Length: 224
Image (cartoon, rainbow, N blue to C red):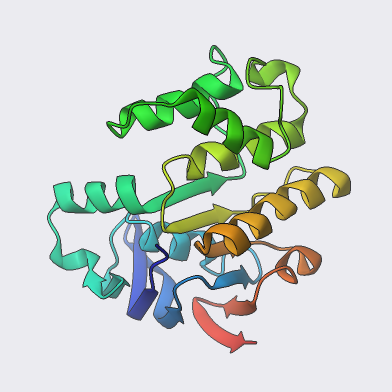
């Protein structure tokens, strides 16, 4: 089941020596359940920071992150970890696949770490869905860069999270590989109704989303 994502007055400031460096400056954002939203903006505008705050990877300086109405800031660390583990999938520009495991092995490990018994047919079906039918036994080093990213996407959604957060998932890919990765993301949103928030610099990539949010200097300046 897809979940609604909301931020209210979200701020994030980092300390650099004696300096305070504001990255997000009061972001109010609402993403409906099942909506696919892209976030664009220049480097340093706060795109990745926004993703990390929504995913519970870091805490805001001020404001709220709400997942289906539940304020992450009101939860204990253990409860935040549970939300992150059960309800959210992450895809990053760096794939972070374990090189000693096969494609299927990376998915099975993701399930095992969440206390879910891996089912071979489920893993194989998901790999096929992202265009990797028959490549479950292959280790990352023998897969193309685009194929590795598709394994990373499959790993992020193997536990069927309600929310998928993707940070520049096509940033290191050529056009053909990027198109295949975007096809995977779009299909997951269409077939599973997952709520997706994707950071990108590429306008063609962003055009796949239902809506585009533009950030500048830590603020939303446009939403269309």
